[in-house]
Length: 183
Length: 183
Image (cartoon, rainbow over all chains, first blue to last red; front, side, top):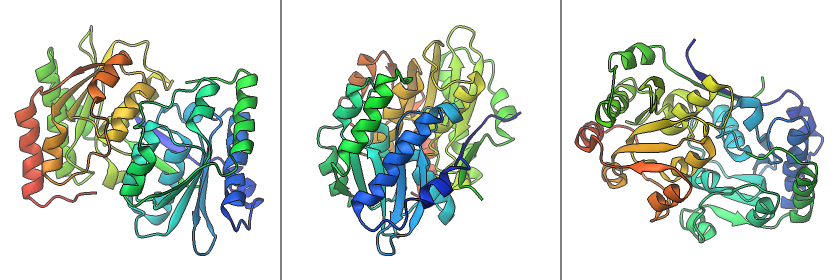
């Protein structure tokens, strides 16, 4: 059989996400991403990372996801990659730059996901926990340029940090304390 | 229906690749990656980029792939990401670090794929065309750290460059001259 990799939104995720709507501001949208970080890890689908894409104007939830590294068996299946891919699938094209959409990620993106943002066409990213919070529980964030925020901004991608950071960190620390699998 | 993204090895790719075996050295293994870069683009599956994973000791072709950005509709579907994911699927786990395997990529990896290499566990990467060759035909390689080679080496990943570069560049230039789609 031909090799293949499938990133599939878990069935529980859509109704779970709907429970967080309507979400009018960055903090409440981030609350969904953080809730997904906890739920995805609890279900052992991947590490404690969640993400969601919202339409800036309407406030509509475009799509959401969580880390699926264990579920998919693919190391690329970080929450941001998964969620941006779902948004692209919904739109039927790999470039989202004509949409005024924002990605909410429970943690700042790792080196791979940071570099993936411009390729996706997403216009803005809002982050919860900081990279150092993620590293503190044992995850590697990769060789990320020190000026990653400035680099994204220079490419026309807005960056907002520390939204819901305390809640996001609480999920990370619980995962760490429970000896959650690192990868 | 739940959102999903599928990276599937095209049916022609396995028999196409077998025609390049046995491939005993870096140059002949790279010839496969370069051939895949041309064939994937010719079939309009994605940009002109191909990759293959070989077992260092046995010389066995583990798996191969090409850029599937158009085919999958996902901006993450670069040849390296696709091919490493196929290798992980074959092994049933997202970490390949216990295998002495090498990734052959028709071009040096972009910022995203460079950062993805450590997450995959691959032990060595061999590159054909240089990033500047890719940029010359209009592709963006992202905000890649200047010391990306040293960074990979410090993580235990061997890097060999300029293997089959002229052939890889010829494919890129043909794509550029034909007005191939950029993304």
